[in-house]
Image 1 (cartoon, protein in one colour):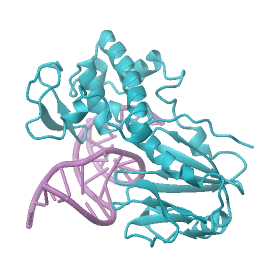
Image 2 (image 1 turned 60 degrees about the horizontal axis):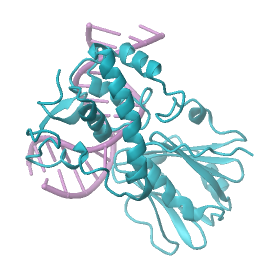
Image 3 (image 1 turned 120 degrees about the vertical axis):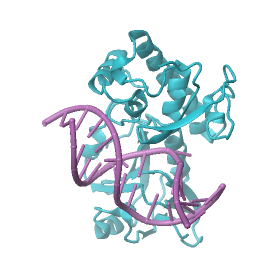
Length: 270
DNA sequence: TACAATGTTTTAAG
DNA sequence: CCTTAAAACATTGT
């Protein structure tokens, strides 16, 4: 039997993964899997047939990816995209407008809902965990995520702005838009700086901030959605007229690496 | 109305 | 073959 090591990552994903824990060791009675974009590429008849009367055994998160293991050698991959959520409902609750996959059990239903359908479901039947799962890059808090590895990744993408590089899942699995901004702000690195131009001292700061931030985010948001520390950029970045928690400078916003980026023009030097 | 939104994939270009 | 940038995807809220 394959056991999934709980290697939690990106805080929101970890939080949502745990929402289905009430369904552990319980059998699925019916599967509601209407054809939709989130299920593109999935063998729907196989998914419906296999998950019906299967038991949820285990789950894990890796970066923004989740994997749920069922009996009958069934593996369900879930990516939340931009607007996806996992939650549970009473089993007699009707399917809601944007519910993309509903696994009904005796007491509860396990629901994946996603209005924009940027999320994605993967489904495999196999003795082993699927290949796409085994090939994911080292998690930020794993021993394989070393300073050297991170430095080499920044060099490899040396012409792109550091903000864009932090968003690349091959190097920073689980880092998203707010986390990237938070890392850069904490490390005092300007988001537009070329990844190849950051100093060795900056690389060390980025490394330690990336790891410590991930740990704290998992303990707060990832645990029960409590707020991260009050002095984080996180609390100011979406507000009009937001100011830097460190030096009170007005924050700046611009599109960098294709995403809205927030930074402090005073303490983040280019 | 028009645009932006916690993300990835595809396409095109360098 | 590799990296980078921009568009596309679908829906809602401001």
